[in-house]
Amino acid sequence: MKRFALLVFSLFLLVYQAEAQSFSFDFHGFVNPHYYADSRSVVGGREDMMLFYPKPVILDSLGRDINDGWQADMLAITARLGLRINGPEMLGAKASAYIEGDFTGATNATIDNLRLRHAYIDLNWEHHRLLMGQYWYAMVVHEIMPMTNPLNMGAPFHCYARQPQVRYEFHHSGFEAVGVAQWQLDNMSQGLLDGIPTSSTQFARHSMVPEMTAQLRYRTGGLFVGAAVNAKTIQPVVNTTGLASDGTLHTSWSYSVFGSLKLGGVTLKAQTLLNNSLYEGCSMGGYIIYTSVMGNDVMFRDWTFNTVWLDLERNRGHWRPGIFLGYAQKQDEGPVLATYSTTAVLGRGYNLDYLWRVQPRLTYTTLNGLSFIGEAEYTYAGYQKPVGNLRLSLSVVYAF
Image (cartoon, rainbow, N blue to C red; front, side, top):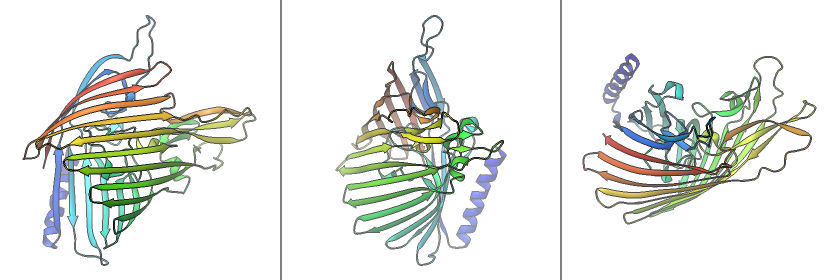
């Protein structure tokens, strides 16, 4: 509580100083109490508010499925505070800074703690933009983000994360080119750290290569389309004790095509992803570590998901009905080499052959920033014995 009070005091002090120096500012946010109930246990995060897919069937000694059965919770951890500061022109560019936080915590263990979401400097010229700081993960195209209300925002079909980065954009006559170099903080790669499978920034840090993404986009009127390619290089095996790591690197490639269309009160958004390894983006995919039978050689191989999703919403005054549809299919990673054995399988969704979701919603919005949202989210996971989960959720959002 003392840390939160200090933050609020610092923000007001910053605002006071900004006024004195002819800066302008916008302080905003929302409060979002959220109730949700699931028909079975799920794979997720933050008290399972971040839902990925249902857990598999696991039978007890009496033959009953321990993951079956309703459970419910209510949280308000997504309450958000943001501050944008617009400063004087610098280097011929419009200059601004933005900082935003919520209370979901950086990990499940720190849930309810204040967490940094965005913190960046933004320099805008006529045809160029340079952004430095923490911003959306580069495979997150925020212009086409699904309009669902729960914390997953379409994940794992749609990426959902933020990373420290340097982002350059060029735009002219509707065409845009985007290049991003990004590092890791809250969303970390998986690998073997001292022989133990874990999530850590160590695997990306030891590679010395930032994750790189390039996008080409075009927009005109209500149409927005684009494509992206992503390259992530990590050192999957890091030792801090015993024998030193051999420094072998592994690069995973992922691709995306995306777009949105607005016609009258209807908004359509869609994306397809080839996820070689987008675990850090809260999506699907990963890789396998193989060790030679002689124990002196290590090899890595990606396992891949093809993913497609669609989000449709109709604005009818106070009412906004909508639906999200998502499907993911795992691809065959190929035969296991006879001279190698599997050491570790890392990522998200390896034990699934496919995954799909149907998620209708209805939003009622007043004229004063108060909204009521009801959703039904059915996710079906293709384990060896497929299972489905029905999530029912109710939310109230007060934006200011």
